[in-house]
Image (cartoon, rainbow, N blue to C red; front, side, top):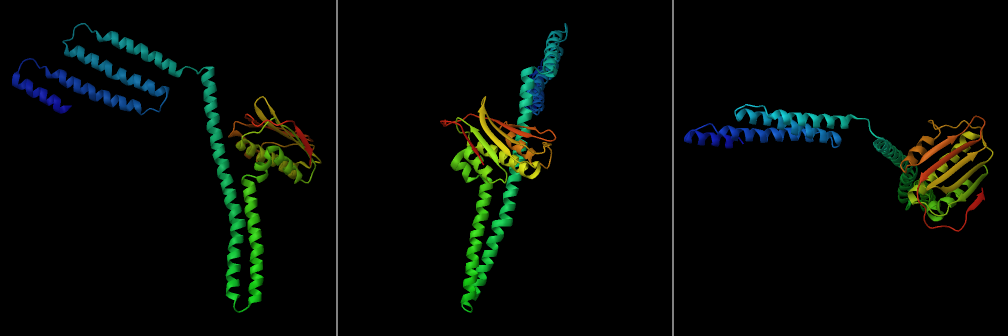
Length: 332
């Protein structure tokens, strides 16, 4: 740009006449100023404020440019006033649109974005906690047993020639340790995705879960189909946590689990006749359940007056597939 201006000035110096290179210098300066203004405007985060910043940048370039053109043209009637007025009015209107209170649709979208941000963070936290738990279980269980197994086999190898009977006992001990390590691995795999959930679906998995509890649990299922695997897994672990709370804290004599699908939502309700007083506070495990369900836009509701009964309602929006013939119920 500078070279163009210098070149034009050199040509004028040779040819003489009115100083016409001023228009060349003006054009070069206008291009440079426009580049700087647009670059600064584009640094604004994407969205409505970036468009406003671009509007301001254009106005900031046009107004001085029009004034300079008026001055270089010899002055006279200040005709740039009309352009300045139009730009001022449009900028004022744009600023009002930017700062006005959002409408209902915008508020809904903002709330949706906030909810998605929160649930994404909660899902990531829950996943990180799950990975740490799996790592801890593998480290304290299967890994420790496998290390012990290696030491036992190494000792058996060293005794194989000098004391075959002792070596045989150590090999038998190692074999038993292998079975225990396999059981630990199966336990970790069950905590990640129970095989019964894959084999029998959510109803069968919940019924199997109820059979392992020390108190009677009525399981009622009214599902006309099968939910997506990820949602079935989330609901299964949520029901498992709720039943674990019944055993640990409720002092209940009986519990019930109901699975149904209503208005496009998979609903699981866990009730008990215990002491009541359950909350979503820390220590109950229910906050983790809420975070797990939020990843699927699910919700959890707790009704637990002092003295009981307690009802925990889990809802996750989903569509079912593979229709079944009839509802089922069972008592564990």
